[in-house]
Length: 445
View 1 (tube, rainbow, N blue to C red):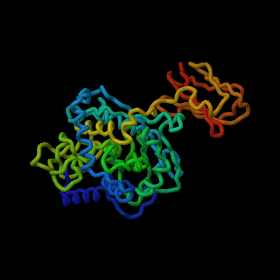
View 2: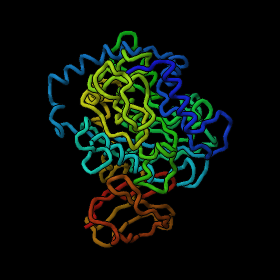
View 3: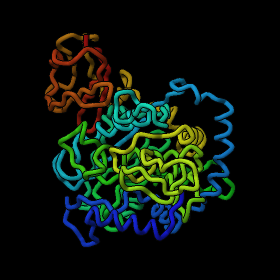
View 4: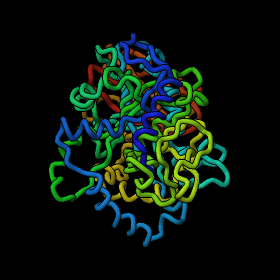
C-alpha cells in the first residue's frame, strides 16, 4: 500500500494529461480538471509547518491499535445494525455574491444530494450505488444528518451560506481566516466548508483534518487545532449529479465520492496504498490488499503481485473515479469506530443534539407576546401577537431542517398561516423581528 516514487509520479503525470490541468491563473468558474483528488499529505505538512502539529503517524497508530483490538474483543461491530449513530453536519457554502445555484454558491439540492450519498455509502444501503452484491463492503453503521439546530439553539437547515468578497481560496486563507471565523462548535458538528479553490489548492478535490489521539504523550496542546477541524471541499466535487442533475460538477468526481473519501480521513482512514515508497507500506487494514500506487481508472490491476489480492479499486480511499467505488471494509469500519469513540472532537459528536429539531418554547425569552393555536392544526395555524403594526418575518422548517415556507409579515393581533399544503408531521415555526426570534413546534394533522 505504498507507492514507488517513479511509478507514482508517472501515474500522477498521466492524470494531469487526462485532465488537461494547467498551473496558469484561471478565471472564476473555470476548471473541469482535478490534478490531486485529495490533499491529505500536503495538509498534514501545512499543519506541521504552520501550526506546529507534532502528532506523527507512528504515535497515532500506536495509540489507536489497542483501541481497535478492544472493539474486536467486544464483537459488537460484528452485528450490523446494532450500533447505528447519526452525526450532525453543517455545510458552510462560501460564495462571493453569486445567486444560489450559480458557481460556488451551490444549491440546497446539491448539498442534500451529498448527505444522501454519505448515508448510502457509509451504511451500504440496499438498492443504492453504495451497495454491490458480493463485494467486500460492509455497513459502517455511521450515518449523517444536516444539523437542525444552530449553536444558539435556533432552527437551521444545516446549510450555512457565507458571503466573502473573495473569488477563490488557498489553504492558508482557509485555515487562518475562513475556518476560525465561520466554524460551528466542532465538538457538536462536523463542519464541511465548500468553496472555490485557488492558489496552492487549484486542481485539488478536497482535504480533511486527520483526527487527534487523546492523551498522547507530548500532544497536550492538540486542542489548539480545534479551529481547523473539519472537511474542506472544492465545490464541483461535492454532491451527486445522479440526485441533483442541475448542480455543478467535474466529470468523474460527480457522484459524491470525493467527500466520502475525505470523511474517511476525518474518521482516521488512510489511503489504501499507504502514501509510501513501495509495496511494504500499509494503511493498517489487513483486508485492503497492498497497492504500489493510487489508481486512477476502474480497470482491474494487481500492482503488488507478490502479495495476495488485486488492488481494491472499489475502495473509497483510492483515487479511482467515483463510479468505481463501493467499499469500506470491516477493518476500515473498526478504525473509524475506534477513532469515533476515542479521538478528540469525535466521540462528542455521538451525543450532540444538533440532529434534533428545537423543542417548543426554545428562546422564548428573546421574543415575547407570540403564541400559536390550534396545535395540532389541519389547514390554518393562527398566531396571536401583542406586536401590532410591527414588521417581521416567519419561516417554517420540516424535521430535516429544510425551510418550507418563508414570508415577510406585519404583526397584528391575529395572523393566519395557510398550512393546508403541508404534509402531516412535525414542523418548526420560527418568528423573527429585529434580530430577535421565537421558535415553536407544531403538528400538522
